[in-house]
Length: 279
Image (tube, rainbow, N blue to C red; front, top):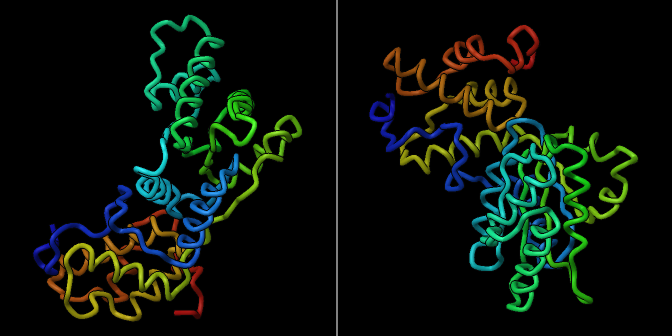
């Protein structure tokens, strides 16, 4: 749409997670480092939380890429499943043949055999669950029981939970205290600060092929940072709509006025009347 007008090879602010656009901003870089260190230590449970739109799914995919060739991974993007379906989903991800399994006990036995095989090969197995706040309580308890599978020396399965802050509320239930106690590492993703928002925008533009002068005016950058609250998904939405507004007027740079148009057209951002004298 506006790509050729601004000298872009592709749309830079698509909402679909793309690891090529990952910016190692302080909070996200720290979270990735913690994940890799904790998994290297063969810890059982690791938890990453963050508000909607802070980049959890992107970080999740980046982790899976980092583990490629180093670990056997199972990825469950929609964990709103009963316990039996969770076991079957994990088994499918680990390429376990369940054709001869008629009940949950047999599925677990087959899973345990596969985990033992991987352990014998020296290959760690990592289960990554996105949107973990949606897991039913019974399924979370079933997940804990799944991690009871172990040898005398180490756990056979490591679990990484990605979720919204509601996951903390869920895990705070007394009935889930055993699982909560097994979470040895945890991290909460923070929104981008003002400087990181500017860096984030420039990084994505560069990845999309832009190599000209600043495409967003300084005032536009400040307004995007303030109105988005540093939430990457909202930064993407406002930047995209700002580019649309500038393109529609034939402008070569996104101004504060273009961002104002984007704000008025976007829910979930801080409204102009609440921005106060900062502007």
